[in-house]
Image (tube, rainbow, N blue to C red):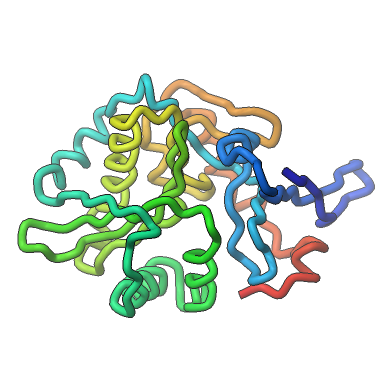
Length: 251
């Protein structure tokens, strides 16, 4: 693995110096070690081949994973109504219908510029996606998809998407629950649901969610420390771009 930092900003009066941290997978690297160091795959630039970024990500220790009351409430809404099919990524046929499903989801959920087609194609060609999770109802209608990265010890759902009729229904939360259950059933040690920023953040409803604080994984009772942190995220936003990104065109 190769690790590097890129200068972002500073406040010399308080000796505060900001850097963005990156990692890059090299031949023979163990994928789980990159995740354990607090890094997630970066898809913001077409030049970022196998590059990962450090962020406040979350993870769950699966051997002790059990649903809490909120997760049980959500599970009851969708368990039995949707079934999951898991297809290895190298055997999955990417169709135009599949692409459009994702693009429409991102447009609704995050705005029209977050995930252009070229960025989605970059994600699909990144080289670490292991499988696609397909969720369908009893009529065979597709409710959602997941793009998952896994090895023998972890599952990371890099991205998920779902149909418009499931917007604002807690279906996204149910997908997280079901991915965690699926990962636990195959004997994985950790489930990584991605970054945890902003308030409210439904990921904080996952039980015993550890978060990366830049140095180590931190766990608090009922995710109290993490919730407190996300509540102040809006006041600590910046609009700057670090030096490395300045030299790598963004999607």
